[in-house]
Every structure is written in C-alpha cells, then in structure tokens.
Image (cartoon, rainbow, N blue to C red; front, side, top):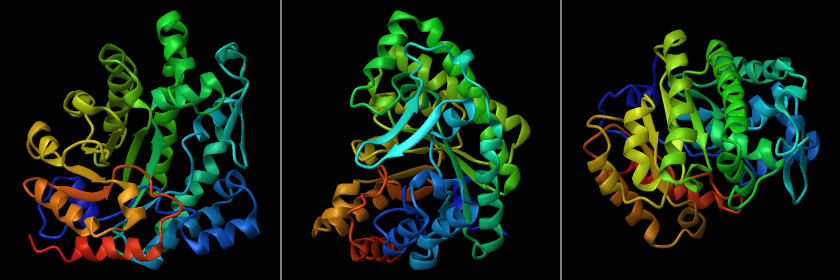
Length: 341
C-alpha cells in the first residue's frame, strides 16, 4: 500500500507533511558507527547487502521517517564503468585512472557491481514497515563526471569545467556513458523494489547558465525520459544543488516529478516559481539542525507555511551533518509532525 511520502510525490494533497532526511543513514547515528567499526570501510559496507540494508533501516527504526533512502554512494556508477574506487580516511573518495588524461574506452566495464545494491533494495523492501517508501538514488551525470575526470572531489570542479570548455566532445562521451549507466542502475533498483528514486546533482551550482543547460538539464532529461518509458509509475526526484535562479528551468525541462531544494533558496520564491502543483522537497539548512538553536522550530514553520499550497516533502537542503545530535533530529521531527497549518 502506498505511503504518505509516495502519495505526496505523486501529487496527492495531505494535511500531514511526509519527512525524510538526506544522508539520514550515516555517521550521526551511534548504531551506524558501531556497525562500521565491526564491518570495516564504507565501500565494503555498501557492497555488503545485509549490512547496507541494516544501515538503511536504522533511521527508520529509530525515528519512524516516511522514507528509507538506500545506503550506497553515487560513485558506484564510475566503479561499474571500470574506474578503481577507494575511500581513504580523511581524504574522501579516490577514482583512478583520472579521465582528465585517460580515455573512457580504456576502462573495463563491470556491471555486476550493481547487483549487491539491488539486493540491498530487495532486502529492505521485505523488512520495511508498511507505508514507508523505499527510495533509490544515483548521482546525476554532471556531478558523477566531475569525480571521474578529476579522480576526486574538489571545491570548484575545475578539471571538469575546464574540459567542458576545452574539449566538450570528450566530456560529452563521458556524460553519455554515465547517462546510459544511470538508467540501467536506477532501473535495477526500481525492479528490485525502489518506489521512487532521486537524482543527486550536488555540483550543479558550479556551472554558468549555458553549461547548466547542456550538462545538467539535458542529461537529466534523458534519464527521466528513459525511466518514464520503462517505469512510468515511479516518481523521479531531481536535486540540482546550487542551481539558484535556474531551478525553475530545471523543473520544467527535465521532466522530474518532484524537485529538491537546497537551503540557499527562499522557499516562498520557490513556491511562486515552480510549476503549479509540482511536489517540492526541502529545504532546512543542515547547519541549523546541527546548531539546534531557538531558530530551528521557527524555520521549520516558515518552510511548511511557504510550501503549504503544493505537495511538500520536508527534508534538509543537503545531507545531515555527521556531528548532528540525535536530540536535534527529534526536535525537528516533533516540529514537522506537530505542525497544524
């Protein structure tokens, strides 16, 4: 039976606003830290379906969120495309060889790396409480490409941005490969039981308008169109972090069913500018949740009031900070669920 979150993503009005948090399965939870100490590194846990399912369910068991987001990583796609992937303590993810000076066709594709992720989804669907929506996800092509080109994350994505200007044909080859892989990856998650999926474009904000159209809107539109052909009943949430004034164009042109909004945008402006009736997700600042000041409940109310005229999924403007106290999350949940409108 569809739950509140899935109904909202499909545009159904509700007096109660559903709630989940990006990165809700993670290091702020003591049960996650305990399991990680026992199981080892991040990537090993992501490929261990039993462990990944347990982690996915941890915030559901503790907080009763309306959605369970798959425990995985956006870099599974480049790993399946043949890049080596490792997560180094204190340094973040590393991919090799870097595509800034190596050709994509030199890699050896290994799509079997998707199967443990799909198995995690299958396990979670059998163990989730009734009415909790299972959410799959993938990275959007531009964001994934920035890691593949540079071999790591960076503050301004300069390697990929420079390639976009210097050799757009080479970048297009990479983007096209990511589009194709992402359709396969998300289709596998949906077939395994994901009821909705989110496309994370964490570095969309680093692009100028023309490049945003080419490297963010166009590839995401291709993914959504392909998924709509094969899985027409599965909502796709698009999250172009940092898109700013380009968000309405993203919402209109990509075909996503719902749009995630980061904390830098005024929710009242978003409510005015997005297409009528389009579900919206967001957009509390994760640092306000970390701080837990008296402003927390006030800001929750302001967001709920701004989005009251359309289907709304309450969430953060990006992932929860690993230092966030459990009691602050409990305050957030109480504020959202206690809101009377």
